[in-house]
Image (tube, rainbow, N blue to C red):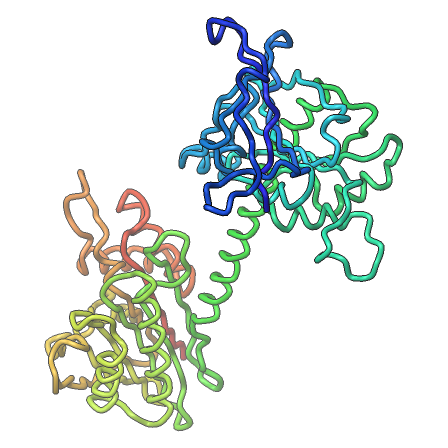
Length: 492
């Protein structure tokens, strides 16, 4: 495609020291050269002009040397001879919808000479709005650079051939521009009184429409500013909506990964509280589950993958699902934990990743339980007439993933006729307390806190909520680690 021939202007005496006429200063323009010298066709009908609207009406136009101006540079040169600044900063500002420096308008109209657009176009700071003109859509695509903020489109332009589908679509040219310029503000220019067509253009995607016969510099300047700001607002709102949708999808996904206890037929009551350490997350590296097998045994588990990022959360879910499947298949003790360690070793992203685990299997009569600890804090047992206390943890085995071929002893624990058993992760006991937050709450502090809350009559879900909230308050704010707490209650 031949390059457009720019309109020439004389350099005012104030700029050059002497007046020049176009005949004196214009370079010779030749036809296409077979030697690849880059000459410009003299019969080209496409003329691309750019004008700085705030230029003085007394100043005439200065010529440009064509052999030093390629197509891209010609597209970025204003009427005063000042090149538009398509720098990374300008492009970045446009990408964020916040123009810096001059506003730039791309006018797509097949008769620029007969255009009603007047030169007095000013932005809110009083700076001139630069105008870049294209006679057809082919030129417009070439001139559509990142420093263009708004497009003024004549709806009377013929639609591109490739857009024709055999139907008479009056807005085909607008739809084409919206496809090639999805991030630019667009003003539709239509005949005076054609309100229906203008309104339809806005419904299709234009920011506003203007009547050709009523257009003046003041109206157009205001319309350009409005269109740019509306486009910026629309883009910001769309990004916010997309962000909210992603957050909702993540929340639904994470909520679906939390377990639903399988306790049908069991007299035990179940309660749980979960608080991830990650900001804006519902799931962390802590995990828990509870199921009842056909023989009436209730199996409960709580665990903690080191770390609390998305990878640790995913690994925790895998371990929980594996535990449920293995438990329902009849595995327990060393066999169960050894298989879980194999799962961990195959699924972890780093050889240093490990997980702690506590499993409890409560006999069908509810009076005794088997306890296995893999580097995990021991559960707390509360019974009427006795102070709450930690279950024995002398035979605590290593965390999963630390020692190949490790063993995890299973301890028998007497529960009694009425009891409450609380399983928890270390996030509950590692919060800071005291003046200056220099000390950890620790297991002793947690036991004292739960004893006091039990004495106040708190039970089940209410007790867990109070415990987690108090630990957070003692910490002076949100806890940095994940917290999971499970409570099983038996009443005669």
